[in-house]
Each structure stands twice: as C-alpha cells, then as structure tokens.
Length: 138
Image (tube, rainbow, N blue to C red; front, side, top):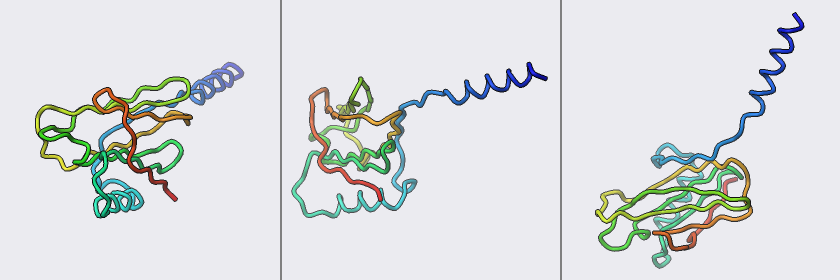
C-alpha cells in the first residue's frame, strides 16, 4: 500500500511539473471572442491613413492575437510564413511575405505564450518593424 502511495505521489509531482509551451496557430475571425472581433472591426473601419498592417490584441498576459491586413503586404506580394523565437527577456515575431499574390484579405494568429516577457519585437522579411496598434482585453 505504501509503495502505491509513493508511486501516485511521484506521478502527481511529474504531471504538475509540466512545462508550458509557447504556441501559435492561424484562426478564423468567426472563432474568436467579441473583444477581438470588435478590435479588428475598429481597425478596418478607421479613417486613419494606412499603417503597416501589423496589429496586436492582448486578451490576457499570455494570450495574444496578431492581425495582419492588406497594408502589411508590398504590392504584388502575398502572406508568407510566421515564426516566433524567444530569448531570456523577449519574444520575437518573424513575418514573411510570399512572392505569390494572395487572395487572403487578412491573417489572424492566436499566440499562447509560455510565460510573460519584458519585450516584444516584430520583424517583416527579417527587418525590424513595429506594431501599428495594440488593443487590450477587459
């Protein structure tokens, strides 16, 4: 009986020590909450001059949405790959354009961070850029 208890205790400790993983995936707008939809609607209906097309919505400290619209693309280009890298105090988002034109009007990514970071950096085609606008959830 004691061996069973020790085995269960060790198993529960190992399960509880699971490391969080940073993850990201493309999501359709109709699958996100109303706050994110409202943020995107505000971007698309704003009278502001065109920006760089890179927008971030912080739902929580660990859940973010990255929205890219047509302003992100250079003429004749399409949406390419996205990658996220981390170091001790920052996470970096690498965005690429594709040489093939795209039919997509936008790209929306859900980013789940593994922890909080001090800084965020964004790169377009390996050159540092900025986020045009950042929104925050309730």
